[in-house]
Length: 387
Image 1 (tube, rainbow, N blue to C red):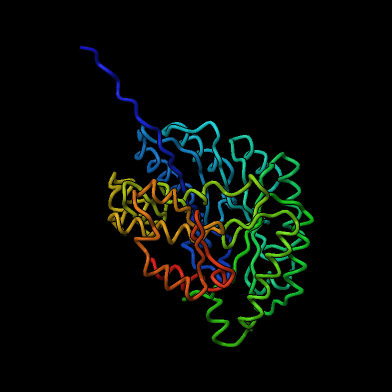
Image 2 (cartoon, rainbow, N blue to C red):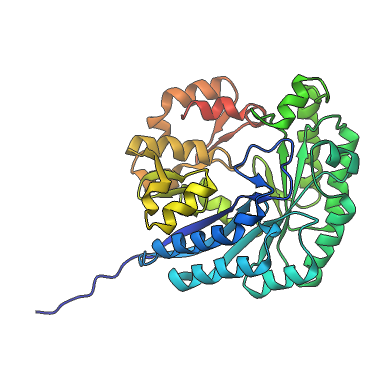
């Protein structure tokens, strides 16, 4: 009797690595990150590498993206970033075309550090600029000036990094439409491959919330903030940037693969403090405590760091697929939904979609379900229908 070897279909898997250290906490930031804890870095990296090793041997998966975020990953000595990448490559099946992104902040990198990044395989960097106006940067707690950003950007180009994202923000305290236009036009003139444009959200328990409540700063009115968004969108599109997700613009072919995979509901593993994972129909996250994270790993009790956030049913997955897909400007592809779930989303969500179409927040054609222009402004109302 002839024995046939079962051929496993290799699936894509993304990796997120969280570096929770910052030089200074930005006033608007509610991410899990800590300033003035540099003494914990070495112990943390050792724990992080052990966690990566623990998740080895997922043979049916191939790592296609690695995203190192924070915090401020570039605050660390480059040797630690190298150790993380090396550990990943030693313990996981790596795709030949691997997208490796690291977030960096001006004032925490030099040319030598960027050269090391490129040498170890980092081929995409995301620079947190937020504004070209130094006064606005100071008001939101950034540690750098525009001039320091420019030096950082030029160093990245000089060492040969060919895929750069620049983060910008709108709706900042005391920011005018002219301020934003100047930032957009200045950044476009640098010719980056990708630009992310985020609206300021005043999160609870941040310094920004306190400043707003105490009337130390004034936020632009909502109609001004929306005018900023649409003006920026138009300018970016006129200059060759494809608007492919609510907050993201890219030259064609330079869309963030890591983020796109997340919006397509593909699986990923998160490593480090507060890192989230989506694997085997489960969403889970790690503890927020650096001390607890390191202690549990040193004791071999990896699972103690994790909290299961959700075990998805088929209905949960379908709703989430709609919610994530409607972040993309092209929306949800009806045929791709049918292929994944063997059902038609227009039928499954007929009540929700009828309501959203009547409200002119969503439009449907033969192939796509997507946000209207009004839906872009009121996207939260759309997503709420699929929670």
